[in-house]
Length: 440
Ligand SMILES: Cc1ncc(COP(=O)(O)O)c(C=O)c1O
Image (cartoon, rainbow, N blue to C red; front, side):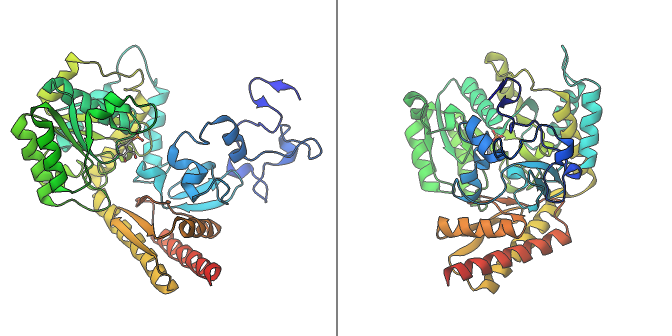
């Protein structure tokens, strides 16, 4: 077999899949038009999932998009790769259509390929995505974030939520000259916040993890850290809103020793409120990180905060080559325009409430036990007593044309309209009935 150094080994390694309107009735590329298709006698074409598993060490660069993460097992039946995503609807590489409740892990709050955002990105990139100089959009967006987010007097852009939160911790450590951090939540894959293999033991020792909304654990950790405390970093909403005391105590514990309070608003920013949970909870952090919905699926994150803390950026080093690329900045500016024109978080909360109620009704009607919905309206999830049952449900739901998130949030989007809500209820109902039949 000839080795083609551009497309890999073997002729099934075709380049980009065709757009959906070039798929034949079975959802496959029209064989007459595509010379790269494999003749049946030569070798069966490998699926995109098989090809992914051969070249991507974990099967997908985003952990939550691995087949096991999507469906609970590596051999589960369900789509893994898409060719088109518009509104809340996805077409996979077999040409099958799905309604998506996951909205790319909450990265998209308006809808996929939202035309106003796409148009803004096209305009920006066609004028030059990057250059020797910074894009003017970086300044414009920083000014607008400072006007919207309670703690923001300065902003700096990065590409991912993990980067932005890591930057906040770096700034707090630089400002205070201390190392110890107390943390509660998920902050991405970077060393400072991870327990994973490969993280140096010394790095782990500098971070004390505390459970969400556990006042006693927070106080004990702060007492243990004493004057060595650089920051308390909190994900402010995890499945439910925290008690007012927990956040208020985090604030006073930081103030007592001159440490920084950091909110990770990567999920809550531009979703719970444009300015994040700090806009509604009555506690203002010193620093905060934003990402996900801020640019409706384009790669952009921001660390924002009080001027003295943010300006310690001059004494350390936080920088990335593409941090201020024009496309993602333009997407975020278009998102902010939407927030200016309409109360997006109110619509997301209402839509999420209806999505969740639809699934609650389906659960009640099925008579199944061991499953319930949880979360807050705008980001809600299904909790199962048994992962194997959850996996079977998800695969039944796929057959009904709906993608639900396994073990984590489904996210409401503006694109989830009345028709989508009806489809979600019908699919959840049919999938739960099918599961009940399996178990009968
Ligand atoms: C609260 C929170 N912080 C940080 C991150 C990491 O963001 P990213 O995956 O963009 O690095 C995530 C991702 O899910 C998140 O939910």
